[in-house]
Amino acid sequence: MRHFCISLVLLLIMAPGCRRYGDVSTTTYEYAQALYGACSQQDAARLEKAEQFINDALAGGDISEAEHGYLMDIVELAQDEQWDEAAQDARQLMQEQAKS
Image 1 (cartoon, rainbow, N blue to C red):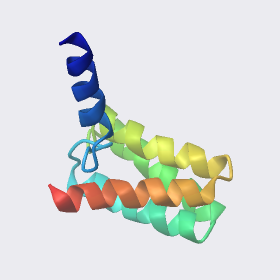
Image 2 (tube, rainbow, N blue to C red):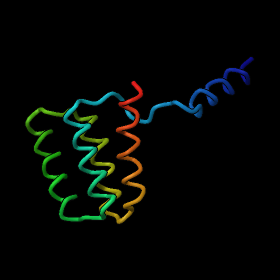
Image 3 (cartoon, rainbow, N blue to C red):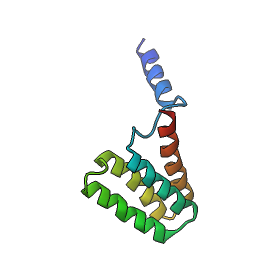
Image 4 (tube, one colour):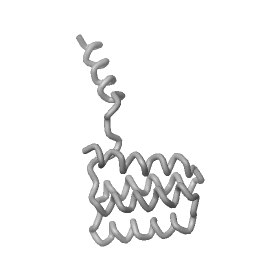
C-alpha cells in the first residue's frame, strides 16, 4: 500500500496539466508579456527596464512576493543568457493563466 501511495503522488506531480505557477494578477501577466518580448528578442535593454518595473511594482505593493519571484526567476535566466529558456518560462506563466 505504501508503494502505491508513493507512486500515486509521483504520478500526480508529473502529470500533464500540473501547474508550475500559481494564479497571478493582471499586472504580473503584463510583466510576463514584457519579459517574453524582451527574451524573444534577446534585448538586454528591454530586460533591464522590465526588471526595474517589476521591482518597483513589488515595492509599491502592486504584485506579491510570489509573483515577484516568478518574474525574477525569468529575469535571472535571461541575465545568464539563457534567453530561450527564459522566453519559454514567461510563455508558460501566461499559458497557465489562460487555462485557469
